[in-house]
Image (cartoon, rainbow, N blue to C red; front, side, top):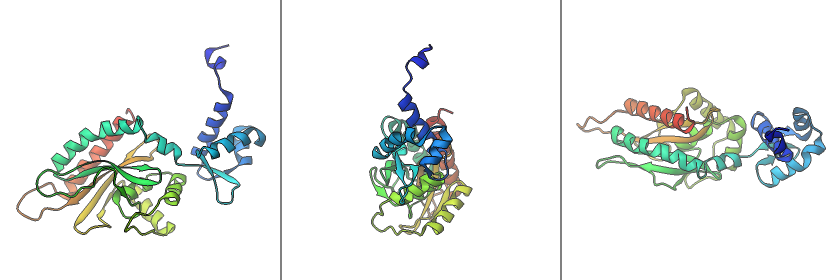
Length: 256
């Protein structure tokens, strides 16, 4: 008997099989569908499903007869040390990015149903607009929130919209309209759009992607335009800079 067979944990294998199946399923699955896909009986899966639901790794649909992956795995992936790893990689690049672009930058993560600013750097000089680390922002009315939601698979996006708690000043958008907007952002690859919270600011937001194409963070610039004689980088150049930085951060996070 090999060491891998000797130290197997069959119950853990069953639980991981269920999580992997639900993660790859575009829709919620019934107990019968899960059993068929895994080649097991519903009785074999019942206790495992019950435990996964109780521990919030899996959730039931409102009708209670189908199962889907929750966002708990995403939350855990963003916690220390993986969360710290993202910041360790991103912050030196963000510091240089703010200096070179002469704009502020911030990194947003999805944490426990909130869009949270995990790190931020202010623009050099006298003129700046920035968000403080720890601030909780909207999903409907910010570039960061919209990009984080846009670059998720349909199941995770649906859970994000369902679980999100509105912040002060944020208004909910009906799902059909909002999903169409998010799909357009995903096709474009980024958000470059007027701020939905303040005048005179253009939000430039790029996703930082995991190997499956889902966003683990959003890198954002609240771009403010100089209209005097000072020749600062324009919105097109700053967009290029932030896009390059987001791709660089993603490649380093994923070990590419």
